[in-house]
Length: 140
Image 1 (tube, rainbow, N blue to C red):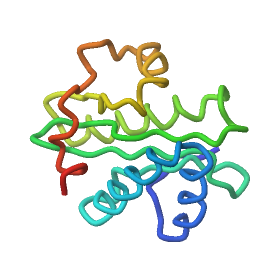
Image 2: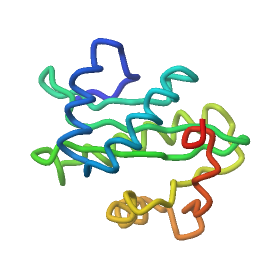
Image 3: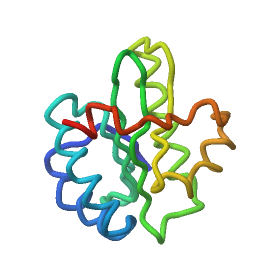
């Protein structure tokens, strides 16, 4: 089990993961943001590798000195095994290493199902960014 920065060799597996783990609409939005974030700062795209396969991925971004969890995807067969938590923790460490003022979660409808996971890790309702549409990762 290994969480690390995205590498170009992960592209096909991460794309397939997003396709399997996200709804069609969410997938389309995520792929645009994924491409933007990779071009800006690929160290804020993390993958969870296990037995040579990508089991999860998280896209983070920093906007106006705020670290923001944009999208978390875990393979359906790897859910409830700590993959999501390990990715959230690793991204939090990245954000803290960059001395962001605040850490938040993009408050779109696609992230609503995973808000309890974030809450279990200490991220309360005040951490949810409702104006996520203004994030550069979304607007370009």
